Length: 416
Image: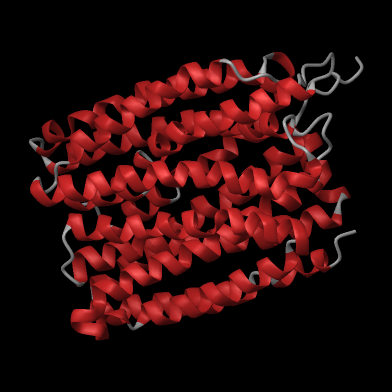
């Protein structure tokens, strides 16, 4: 069967508009059930570092399910798979809206139920991600990829800032009141359904199945793809290991309240908002490698500073806010550069195999790295007279690893 023709210019423009709107409400939903709020909720329920590390890598780690899921792209429309995954995530996350009821249960049962809900939600999110970037690939104008992703990410950053600003005020007045916040996020997820239901798509359904082995063969065959996967997976793996345990350290060791920790989270999204569109324009002009290198070196320096945050005393809060802001600026640049290179490596007529193998590679590393970090921290903290010294060593080790992550990406110094 011949590849489907490209979408018309009007369909591509409509797809970009719906994608921006769908992400504006969809990303706050997925973030609320996979990132900072679940970490704080699990701390409230008494979770160990190992369980927090497992949850921190859960959403990305389950991207490994996308590899066998590639066959679904041969049989079903990407839009239908996106809707199915989102409905699974909505249904699975609904129990967390009743977080107050979970708190009334015995801790082991409450943690088991919360973790089951988070796990099933992550499976739904994984199915959505299987087809989201392949759908977007059909809407692209090659010379404006960076600008488009700067725009789409700026929009959902605005929504996240509004959401977490409200969350900070709510938690300040209602400590551990996570149920209402999960409820607002769930309603935002519900609002995404009609937007993604209208997305146009360039079909990848064929007489031949798209198989996992075909995606794996791409890695063996393409040295640029291998280097891309190694560098981006390493950068993301270190980052996803550091961020949840930064929150845990602030909450457990430095005595920050939930509301104060959420205040630092707002700065995380402010950093992205302040820089995303500028990063997109810069990357379209200069290429990705300069940003890869600068983000890796700059982020490593921030982790060194984080290791000594406890010594700042009363200045710890503004410095924590500054850390999250600066870290977000650098991560935003790396992310836009990452997407640009991925789309340059992806054939437009059949993007799913390349995009999925990238998603799976990064997801596996991001799933295992926080879990490994949590296990190590659990073991070290168990007999530690000074828990802050353990966190300090962890952040310094993360800085050393982060500094090395741009090395495989040197292959992209040339834009050829």
